Length: 187
Image 1 (cartoon, rainbow, N blue to C red):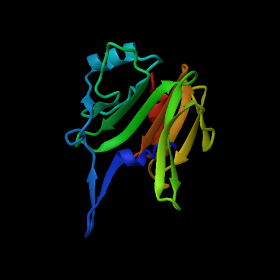
Image 2: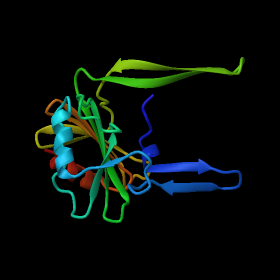
Image 3: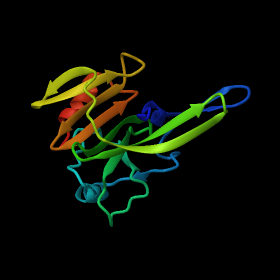
């Protein structure tokens, strides 16, 4: 089952009397590692794929390494997830990356037996397959796919393969145009 990426944007907790919403920010995130340029270069060198990062990030924005956490540079890094926050620490977008070929994804499968009131959860490992659904977007001689988020005017998912790396940008805040602009700057 594919993770619902919007769960990364907002943590929702239910209480007996009301719905409480807490936005995730770098100062409040429980598991993150704020990166400077030296550490980001180290993550690039330890990645088992070509890690690409956007070049046109506004001044004052920060980037955190969400995954792998904690960072262990003694081993090759198989998967990276970066979160970008504006100067006010608002989550703007995330980027996940891994090898496009030869990457195995792990998915959690839960079977529920309603009659016997039991459930079983197991981890299933599958070869990564690129999701070809969504609107085709062409730029820099690449073909990406865009899927809008719940708010059709802002947010969504933009995914493509570049230099043998699968890249997916997700955002609850940015327009499709801004997400494409970020994608075009990935180097």
